[in-house]
Length: 383
Image 1: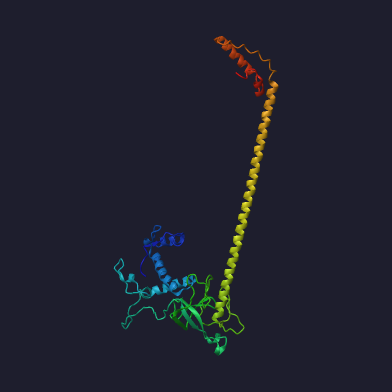
Image 2 (image 1 turned 45 degrees about the vertical axis):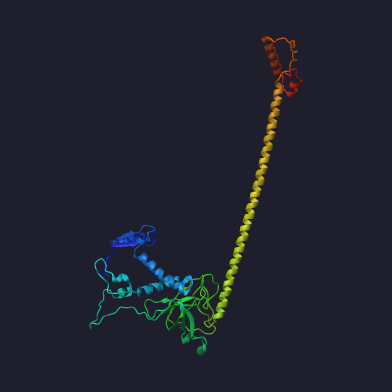
């Protein structure tokens, strides 16, 4: 558009922009790479701020339509489509060079920049986008079934219920519709919309009911572009399997679809309950095994401790017995005990030499004693 990119600002994430190939392209074109600091969202570049703008537009559409979370991609694509056709305040401000765009929407800027604003007759050329095809996201849509695709001829079903999920960027007469029979998104024309009615009626939090279309809750779908030229199918032919599951005939009643969806939900709940019971049983078995192993280890430890104590006691008894035997074999036979010294007369005084002799005699007598029994039989037991 006549401008050179001088600086490229983005977040601090690795892989999306911060990679070797992309940074080489920026360097080759003379563009400075400027990542913002972590957790500084206010310093993000235009691309990051635009992601937030688109997300804030797609979120209300998902809430209003009550569509499953699997359709968030379609909601984001529709938000981009609407943003391009909405007035933008940034286009009305002057840039650094004092230039102010002549357009109000990004769509006009994209298709009209650099082109003549008037024709040869002087009439102004308008690059405005058509908005007559806009309708509510997630609303009820009834598309026409071509005559060659009707199963029962004149008396067969002439339309089928679908859900509007977006637009095609290169056409004004095609809408992206969710086809519940084939579990795909197709681009269709000749559609009648009922914007007062949500196609998906039971996607509120905590609801386990199924809507009339049998929209998926946890399954992906196949994106396919179809303009209505499907081959003719007979009464006995089956529809081509485009999604994860193959559906029945196109004329199947909504209550049968709801009954099948209810049966699938019950089957999933039964499988979940069985898995939970099996996991609980396995956890109980593992806990019992751990307790048994712990009890066995405790019993073995107690047995080992008791055996060690008994061995220590036997060892100590054996050592004491050996020491006693060795000591008794080395001690000579005891000499006869000396006669006790005569007691001093009453009233007399004991001299220092007499007391010393008596003490030495007691000491010598006590030195010859080895056991408690000998000490009790000794004549000096009273001293």
